[in-house]
Image (cartoon, rainbow, N blue to C red):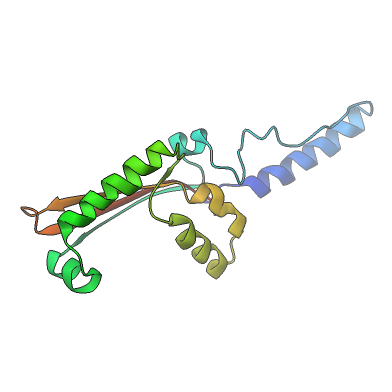
Length: 150
């Protein structure tokens, strides 16, 4: 029930077209898709409306973990996210690319679970938000991915 359903829609349309061809033999079929589905394309419609499954993940990481594991500070990571993922992506005209390599993670998961890895194009549309919490001591991370296509 969570699948985006592109293959099932295509199979259904093919069956309907078979029925229509019997009743309308002069009918020309140009394509079974008008491409509004934006399959395997990063598009505004998928970024705004979502497609397949929409996911939001959040975590709070203790500042001491940020320091010991990542060898940096909460303040520096928040600044980096603003400058790189948000401002840099906006200047580049990114369409749902306000993140640091979400496509690598989506592709790895798709391959590991038998999904179509080419769906990473739109499934990697993602925005990453970082915020200092608990009086600036800890890091809150939020990742929003509107169109994960499974």
